[in-house]
Amino acid sequence: MTAIDLFDRLGDALVVASEGSSDFDLNPDFRPPAGTKLRPAGVLVPVIDGPRGAEVILTKRSSALKHHPGQIAFPGGKVDPGDADVVAAALREAREEIGLMPENVEVLGLLPQHQTVTGFIMTPVLARVRDEFQPVPEAGEVEEVFRVPLAHVTDPAKFHIEFRRWQGTRRYYFIVPYGPYYIWGATARILRGLADRMAML
Image 1: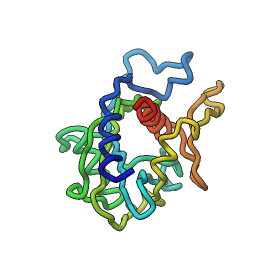
Image 2: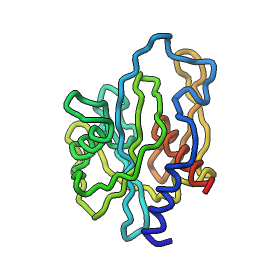
Image 3: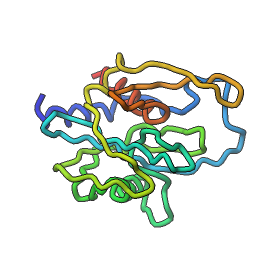
């Protein structure tokens, strides 16, 4: 598959009808308290077609962080007052967290929103990274920037369901491990949604 065909297919996946997702998809008995105010966030799902084929760029959060230390995540974060929208937030965060400049990014479109257990309504921004770049991990925030083959994280068969004890009950979640990287939680759920869309084409 050529790069043009690949990104055309990703564009087609964006128009497949599907609902949003949440950290509660596999835990129907748990819901956040009524009236919980969700904070908007934007995350970039950056795809680059490099020497090894199409890959998704991900980060490993610093183990020193108070929230979600060491977890695998997309570059991104909450929408700040100076951000025009979730796309602007995702592009700004990608520049800050991994040194990916906005002019090197072609936004393909938005994937369905994902609600997190931490009170965010997260919008994944699917994008093409035009040219190779040297990642610069944000000091104190990002421990590592790495890539995973797009084919791996868009294959539903690579996903599994596991659970952990959380607030006295079992919390189930998707995982899509790759080598030493344990990709789980919201990141895996968003990728699973993309995988399901790609499988429908």
